Every structure is written in structure tokens, then in C-alpha cells.
Image 1: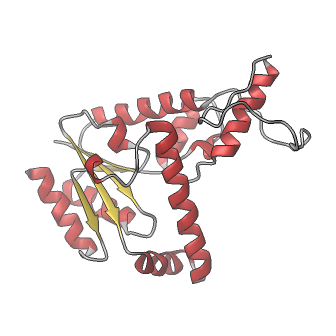
Image 2: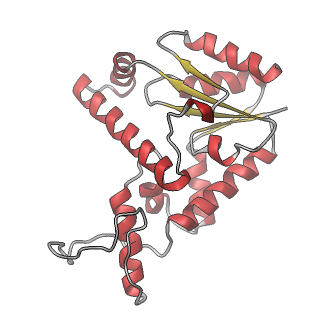
Image 3: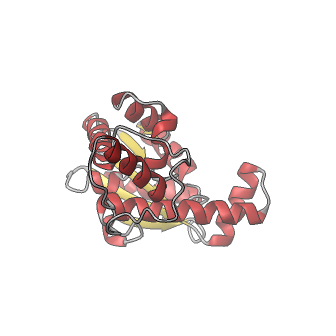
Length: 221
């Protein structure tokens, strides 16, 4: 009986590993479904929270949502992420930035609640969403990171998404950058820090199915 969190580099094969692991252990596997649950609890559309999501996190867009919301209520604007007071010079005030009525603190509170609620059910594999940080103190939680060499990531993305290598590389770089900033801003950690995990597996060195077996054996240990 345990909870397994899977952190991954896009193109590493982690989604396949998560599904096969859940099947082998007869666990549930949760990934994108969490977006809908978070949006529902915040009474938002899925599209409203995409800038807050780790895979698509947009630090600047999140800031402007909070800044303009603050202005609308008469508040002063200071950058949430340590950049100091906002310099309005040169900014087009008529640019249609979306104005939200929630901030990153509210989002992370809901995210923590959703992940924690899922963890209480046990026998579950949670892919992404900061599970390794949110559940770091949970005794029965096993935290795994899946990585791969860049060439293998590019090859896998080109095959899965039917795009050329240049687009695949750009997608990977954007995804990596979003994830890094998300974990810096929301959890104040380096996503790649191996100390966050019980094990880090490189699918360029270890076969994907072997990774499934390794994690499965780890749950037994």
C-alpha cells in the first residue's frame, strides 16, 4: 500500500512508465485529470489556470493576472517573484491581459489539497504536479524522477507528436523552463535535485520496461 509520485522530463517515456506501473500494481494513475479537479474546486475553466500549471507555467502572465487584479481593488503592485515594484513605463495598458480573481497562493493551496486527497486513497500513481514536494513527509510515498538524454527525448517527441526535430527541441526547452520556474516559485526547490527523490532513472540507460520493474520492486521494499 503506497503512493508513487513520478516527476519527469518530457520525452523520457514517463507517461508510459506510470501507466504500466499502475497496471502492474493494480493502482490508479492520475495525470491530466488533476487539472479538471483543480479548476472545478476554484470554480474556473481549465483554460483559466493553464498559466499556473507546471507544464505550461507562465511566470509573466501569472504576475499580470495578479497585478491587474490588485489594481482593480486599489492595491499596490509588487512583484510576487522577487523582482521588486512594477515599472509601468513602456507597458501597453490596453493590451488584453486576462484579469483573474485568484493568485498563485490560492492555486497552490488547491493543488496541495487535491494531491493530498488523492494520496489518502493509497494505491495510486501521481504523474507530475509537484507530488514529490507536497507529499515529501508522507511515510508511504515513493518519489521517482524519470529522465532521458536529449537526443532520445527529441526522437520520442517527434514520433509521438508528428513534428520535426527543431519543433520537438523547442517544445522540450519550453517544457523544461516552465517546470523549473514553477518549482522555484511555488516550492522554492530545484526540480532536478536528486535529493527530492528515492530514485532517478534514465531511460536512455535503462529500458522503459526495466524501469517499471525497478519501481515495482521498490514499492515492495
